[in-house]
Image (cartoon, rainbow, N blue to C red; front, top):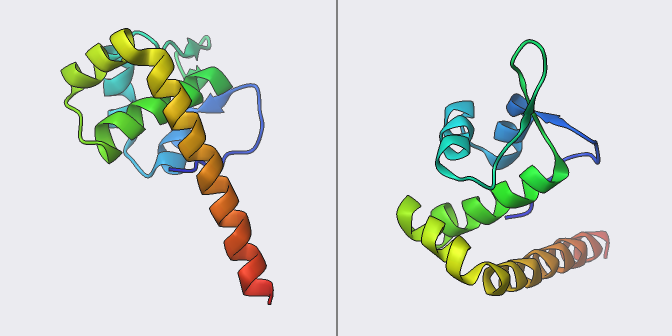
Length: 109
């Protein structure tokens, strides 16, 4: 899944949820379930997600929503095979970007 967010230092939970096509409650739930997600909170308690948080959310989304892992399975997979998963996930992301660019070119022909 390619997430289309402008480059910023912090993202609000609403824009993160919209980018992933999920409810904000799912993002909050994943935050509680996965230690790698630790968004900063401002004085009002609003979550501010960093680009690293977005990357981790993409990885969690990939494992749970696209590959069908259970939450426990995704947690174990992240701990035991994080580097292998990251490498595979990064290759998939790059290929999706290339595909999107090729489709743009095709439309212009």
